[in-house]
Image (cartoon, rainbow, N blue to C red):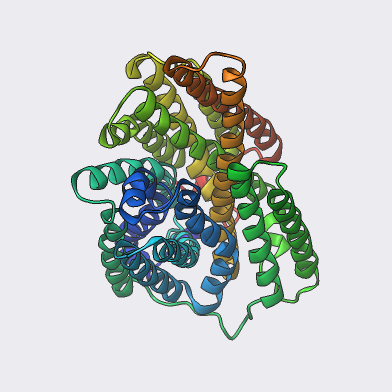
Length: 492
């Protein structure tokens, strides 16, 4: 069992401190993920305070997603180049500074700028954190536990953001949804400064600038195009041109990478079947998960009349099932069976949960119509996310771990952006079709809104079932192999 040797304190300077490192990495990961949703519940309060219009509101969300999603690959490569410790600390401190600016924002423009800065520093932070985890835990049984915890936070962080956003907005002020990041980032930065050893590889590699420009611009255009689809429609010139430009730039990126001596995203990273299947799984999960948060938040607040805090609490059972599923799949099931039976099964379970949620009505009860669906979705995502994150980074050379980790985050972020735009557009069309030709009334408006939500849940279920089929074909059978060729089960 050669893995013991590679984990001796002499060769891995982080080994003796690995659990403390995990705690601070988990804090950093939680901050980045919950920031995608924590501002959602605070938006009405921020809007009335700063006086911006409904058309501008989406930019508070989109600015973060655009910067984060488009710069992740570059952030991952910078982590490989400058060293994970440097980029991790820079990302944390930058995120804290951007959050403080956002909390103090005197107007709309400053708030949007601060959100974009958060996304930029998040793109530096997120891949650095995941690749640090990958390189810190190399004993298979411990690595499984670490990824279980990390995957649970990656999946549940959005729901925790909704709860925290509700509490802060209701009992303090919307600005605290920004200030709270300082309380996450500063302790995490101090802890990681003392615990981590830097691992710069500047002498061995250089950053692929043409590839970075093409990838970042292409991802920006794709995410921007889908965000415009949500507000302007799929046939709008800005939507179609943005998506076309994005696809063209990503095609150019592929050509650049094939000719580059030191590519931003080496083909070897994505050519592995397990990694490719894992990136796809994280993307599909991100697309459907953001849909659940968005439409269930509206349903619980506007249809069932829950407060922001009650809405956040309503998601807790999903987080509980997700965490149990994530940790048990990583520690018990993944080492024995590998990702192939787990990820498709998780997607089928989550799809079943979505189908259950299609039964919600104007006068449904939370316990009967919502809770069972959330439990199934949580358990399903628990089987998808942690095994996918582990598979996506297993066996990657240390020099590629930053960019392999960045691809995980890119898949989740772009999947979330695409899913939100797609589901929002489909839901809005369903509402219009339902109300067409009928006498307007409050009852009709409520029924039409619920019809829009249930249509979105059906589409989410279909996406998850398609993902289950593709990952069942793509992922390899058998326990995953460690770098020394042993299966994880053997390493126990």
